[in-house]
Image 1 (tube, rainbow, N blue to C red):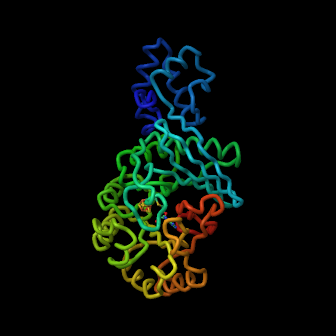
Image 2: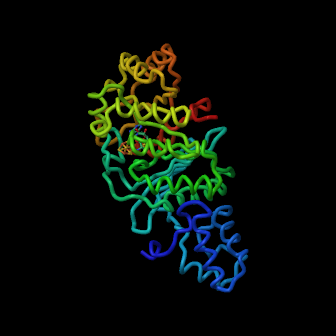
Image 3: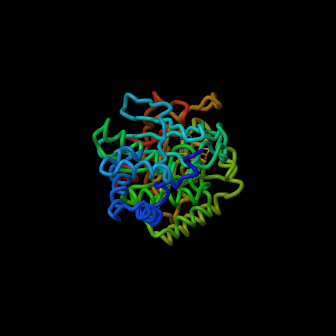
Length: 358
Ligand code: SAH
Ligand code: SF4
């Protein structure tokens, strides 16, 4: 794995690799401005190889390529939905595969990216959970999904990526260091506003507290899916480690620190967690917390043939029960159903008046 032996320019913010780059350029007998040229190629022009850096001398390009890596991801598969969603399966340097999804709406172009190959947390409704854990992604591999997708967005859709959500494969807060470095990379390296980046977690309390300590206003989404301990435990094994009272304690502490609204994700499975009374319990649970609840119809997965999405009319009942209790919420329409029916992750909405549409 030559890639790992070399320094990945995408790992962290623009300034993180500057010293190494500067030393290298000066030792190569080149002027200092070459450093800015390389950085511009990496962060402004989305270069995925040094050969593309045509304003640099050929010899310098070759030497850079021996020392540094741009973490190029190879396309394994690309699927285009009728609704405009584009899903990529990327092949990593050790042949692992992760996916990312471009989701266009009228006002935004959201990129959903992966933080791990697979996931160890085994939520019962999730295709990635079925898949099991393969390995952590390096921060450069997370940021590279953005770089590759930005190239596609420009070439195929003619518009920039406006938002990034960590809602692809994996649990971001179980790969905390790499994810924090990737957040800096997207924010300080590629200049994406922190409010346009959402980290979605199953509810790992230490990671939530670490995000609370970050100075940047990244958005937090928490996958809840049940407002009662026993029911949540049936759906999400993580409930044993961080039960609801502890999770909500952490969310209140987060909010005290950040003063930011938190999104709660609630996937509705027919007859499992969609009872009207549960909406009432959910309203009680969130009392005093400034939050927005995203209601997502369950996306069927092969390992759970008996589970169906809650029908529209009953989702509306659930939504109205929350509304009546003053809990802001929106029903999300899953995107790209025709290309990723088994994925379970494509659940962002066409609804432009959503929580994160600000
Ligand atoms: N591990 C993180 C982020 C990745 S999962 C998390 O769990 O939050 C992204 C979102 O997709 C989560 O809210 C998850 O609960 C949801 N999801 C997973 N499988 C789903 C399915 N089959 N149908 C609908 N949503 C699903
Ligand atoms: Fe992992 Fe999130 Fe899927 Fe749960 S829902 S198994 S945490 S990816």
